[in-house]
Length: 239
Image (cartoon, rainbow, N blue to C red; front, side):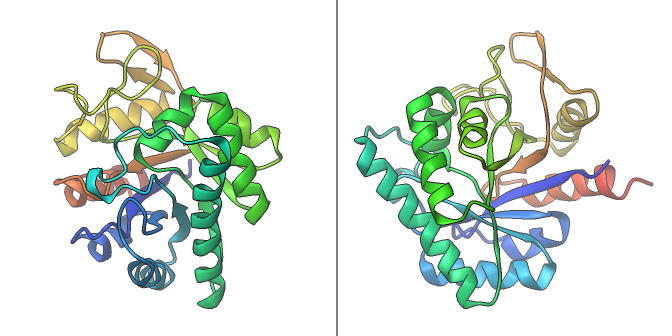
């Protein structure tokens, strides 16, 4: 079974180059929630060197809160915000002779669009306008996936190796004490359950079904490199 491991990158964290050998896809910040055009270019070049899929990671224009604070925008404002970021990433890739592979919303924008059909449709339409061949990465089973499929985009149901879930299938908010999984072994057990058993063991003790096309690791996680190595060793190159 081929497992796509994706990682959020280009956010100014120190481990991007070290993580590259252990992932398949990179979600590169577009300069709004973090990063810059210069860092985007550098990260795309890293992806090319390591044969990693290049993705755009658009978020709210809010570096102060790392794009993790909810913002309410009018539909046209949201469309323009998202479209411009995807377009800039697409054009950067073309300039470098590379190809943008996918789009994944970031942070609060991701979580909001996973629950709001109108927002999800806006993001899908903006992505489609840039390039209909892009793959849309969204929370597994959420309305983001449905909205992207509705406009004709290919999709990837995403699950998270380093985050715990509630029984409604959503990620626990970061304010929750158990939201983040910090130990590599715990992250690996969690990931294997989602990928091979198609099950999530939630924070409430329930078990829910899930589709897992791509597995996310956050590049800003303090243990990101250790978790990436554990995932790659067990899921990609098992002994």
